[in-house]
Length: 405
Image 1 (cartoon, rainbow, N blue to C red):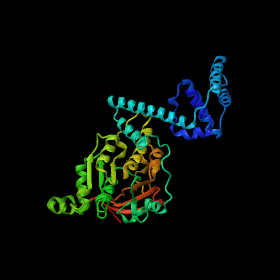
Image 2 (image 1 turned 180 degrees about the horizontal axis):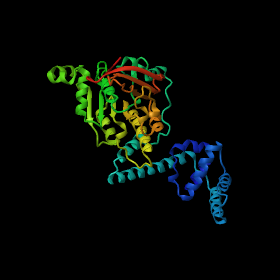
Image 3 (image 1 turned 135 degrees about the horizontal axis):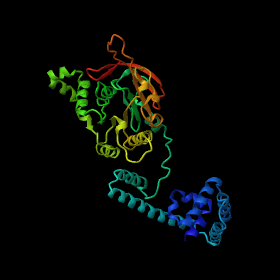
């Protein structure tokens, strides 16, 4: 039956109609050799093929083949010439049945990996099931992009985004929305966490706009971060909150149910994915993203970071949420007001390639008088959302973890 199936697939139309269902693994070793040849030939020549075509292509690809190998392949071609083609409709049903069998093997192998403690296996199984759900057939290409102008406008409109509450920034980059991935980076002690807290919990922040926000902290304990969020929301310093905690909590009450913070020092990406599936946030902030564990073996740290950031982008799309990851800036950014994504620590290009928006926060070097300079230079070095590239100046209020104009 296999040789008859391959004879049918020499027809270009028959091959195209079953292409999405075909796998090399559904054939035996000899059949797989023929299949690979006809697959490459169909993609290159876009025409019906003859057995002799496959023979000629094989000879061209194997110029040092022995006489024995040539004779063996010649026998396969002769069998193919003598075979009768199957009706295309029947061939389609046969290929579908073989494909289903291979999917079953894939699922069985994933199950074995799960039983052996592979924590990434569940996510692989979920992705496979999502791909074959519905008709139990592969969806290699998905639905084409809509031509509905109203849907296109709504998808890319600022009305579909959570606005940054720093007006100098929002005038150029309104905000970030569902399935969009951003990176915020700076040198230590510049105000990365304060930036996030201000955007989330400050006046007019994501929470006040109605977003359900998940803040994942794997650096400092989020008990400290939560207190800073209360400060940003209430506008009260730590000393003022100590004197009047009830007042601070009464002001914080307005966003309390929309801000979830978790310590995730031991979490990996699969755990984060599962938690997002459970609580369904509108926006996720990861402080710091580089420290998230991801399964797999990598030759270098920059390869791991590239795959991690690719996976974070996919997480944003999978859960239809805005996602912002925090990263460190390299020593090159120390004392500089102008910073760009080339100063990202670790995999510069790999990380930057995955982001829709990259914001670097710079500050001036301390002067001789050691007077604090609360100016912060918010640099937008990658921006698929509005097209603006440049910097704006904002003021940090460290006592209440706010950024203002």
